[in-house]
Image 1: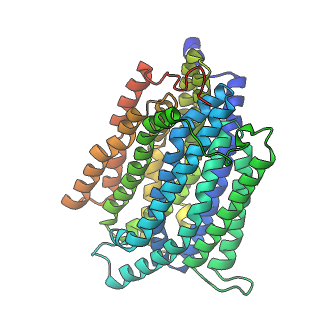
Image 2 (image 1 turned 135 degrees about the vertical axis):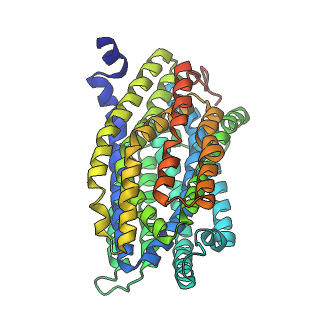
Image 3 (image 1 turned 30 degrees about the vertical axis):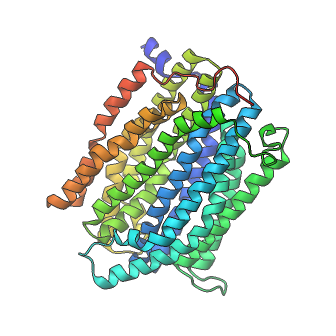
Length: 467
């Protein structure tokens, strides 16, 4: 028993180190998701079609957001390991790569949304719904989408700066900026969605305007702080004077980063495809899924933050050449994440009947939301393990393996299964959702084998970095 505890349970210093990184991320994500929940409730007060329209548009932006995340993740592996070496020039080059990646990905996203936005939204509007409901949902989704496109620029800037700050062990400032932004968003949502204090009632357009303004606020705070504290953030000195990146480093980042970008893109597209499969059962299912996902995001912040902690802490140890310590820390981090999520899942299941009552929508939508929360919460420990395993593979540069493990499994197994069950069976949505969650246990087996073999224990930046 003592051997088991020593292997999977850390000491006070271990948890102090982990929580110094994880808690700021949890707080920021928690407040963000709480505000998203309140936004969702406010939009839901206007009507189910408005809520469904915003949910569908946000599903498309979810794909974009994760593409940006993927674009920053590849260079981020190098950033964390360069920080382990205290190599400021290496971090500076990584930051510049993020700049190029952000500009390219954002430009592509804006072009695609402006050209094909309406067609993509229409995919979620099942013929079983009334023509009037589909037309109204499409109208609200497009209004929301066009305004939200403006917010892609500050969103990208925040991801560039905040990810680099976290990789260099500065997690508090992004948290503070995020907190300010979400409260700005909340206040403006209250004023603009519902039309308070003499302001016009703008509905979904008000929600989009509030979000865009809050993103500009967040970007301003993060950028200003980083450049004002140049002694702490030495990599930022001269970062824009010369946008040069060594060719060798570009090739290495592309080699390791492209699978991550493809993974985030395909995974987010896969999530959108799964929702599209579920939407065959009606707009009520889309609305119920939207409510459950918004609420579950509050509970998921623990394993999401701990996954980021794996990437940062383990990546730093690998960069410093401390391989055995990296394996020990990773094992304990995964155990901490899974055990924590067992308790959190129980709380989510208990609260499942309560949250949907906050929405002004049909009873069938509330019932769907409750059931989806219970099902997803039951599989939360499984998701915690998979998330930590994915970030472990990433931290050691095994990005192609991580790609196959994550989105590869989704497109080869999960999506075909959901497509078949939704189109070629008469199963209700509830068993379909359970089966699609349960199939990922197979993925857990693969993940355990990969971690056990230790194929991720690598230093990918070498002893020195090219200046």
